Amino acid sequence: MKEETGFCPQSFAVIGAGPVGCIVAAFLAKGGMDVTLCDVVPELIENAAGPGIVIEGSESLQAPVTRTCSGVDELADIKPDVIFVTAKANALPLIASSLEAFVGDGMHVVSWQNGIDTELELSRVLGKKPVMRAVVNYGCGLKGPCHVVMPFHHPPHYIQELDPDARDAAAGIAKVLSDCGLTTERTDRIVSEVWRKSVMNASMNPVCAVTGLPMARAMGDPIVFQIVDSLLKECVAIARANEIDLGWDYYERAVEYMKNAGNHKPSMLMDIEAERRTEIDFINKKFVEYGRRANVDAPFNLTLMSLVKGLESSVA
Image 1: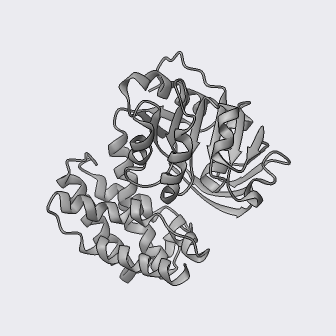
Image 2: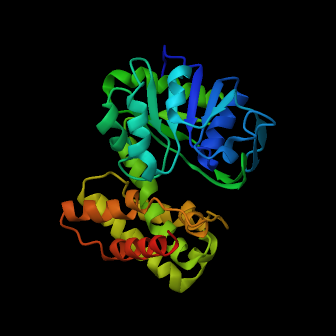
């Protein structure tokens, strides 16, 4: 449901020129917004302002951003109305520290990322007032710098403010995103939406990372699926023990959703293949932590977390 809003942001920054960031930057740019794409790797943003970001797959478009920059601190002079953080969650402490120097009244920072509690990493440094959390429902991969493959897009996306006084701003950001083609709703249930997505990520991503299989093959192999299924049931139990509302029929819907994900490689597998750190600390490790909090054992999450950590250390 769309909300009436008086907040109409025109200037946006996107921190992180991976596939997730390129998509939101391209849609905003196509919608006529002032967009700055920021990344510390110069090669990733080289073509962003011209010829532009290319998206192919379930969505097809090409759009140049207004400008690029290679450091978060450079955004202090640009003063965007809204900053989307799309970089890997493990970079949040550094990003938050840089943002702290200039984020002030009237600016909003949106965690547009995978994982549990990413918004809390930002709010610990910035306070709750400027911080928002979003849940993104598209699959994507980087074919090359500023060239994104988007295997699926299942809107709506969701956004919610941490500070109740920022409700109007969250609704305004959702409206701009929707007008630009990324249908987004402001919600009062962002924690549930985060966990609904994170349960599936925790069930599928580490299995693909360890086996090297894309989603369709992992779901289609009866032996591998046993591990996915065990993780799924364990994550659901942990969520419910922490009073997270997933819905009574969540298990069946999650299995169906993952079966229809196609031959997509989750980001955790792509990170391992590229010898990068994964976001395991904000996915399976969070289920281990929340399991301990509710006195629920998490042997499958602990095992997969340890295996992925082992793979990370072997390529670090």
